[in-house]
Length: 201
Image (cartoon, rainbow, N blue to C red; front, side, top):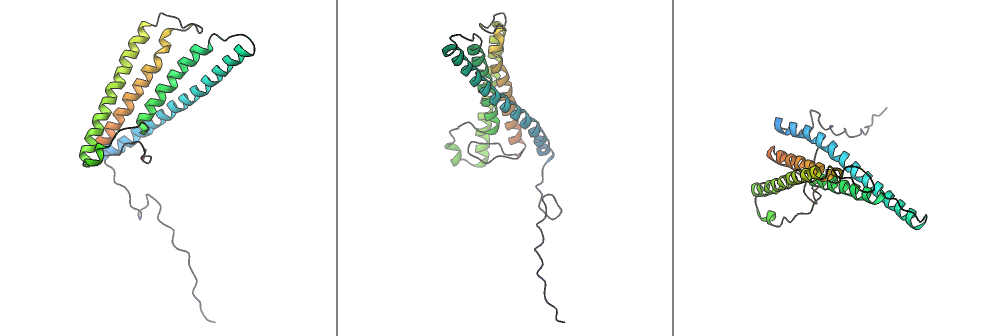
């Protein structure tokens, strides 16, 4: 009886994180930032879902207003001010998430001619400017909300402060996400830029 060789299937590749696979070494600061990123990522997804829900609600309200006005010859007094207020929410929430995810356009021609340290410095300056802008949104939006708190929004009957709350909450998220970008860069982790691949959470 002659023996013959048996073709064996190739050994499976080692799983990520196993002893045979290379594992990226993270510093304690980087591990902390990755834990923070999971929290801020969940907050960003929540804000994005809220913004998307606002777009749907505003569309429904506007459609209802058109139907009531031109088909039923009547009018919904609350639909227009409610739609405008909802529009403020999804604009500012979406803008804040765009800062975290690097969706906003930027003019970065100069960065192509700078070394990595110079790029990081200019990106940090940009994030600091955005922090200041978000702080202004919170400060002046809060002032506007405070000054209009005693007024009633026509058609809805709620405090006029609600008209400026999107500015305040959006500013808080802008500051939070910009500070996260600064902290990630200080820890040696990448930050999202427009046109880049998604970064690790």
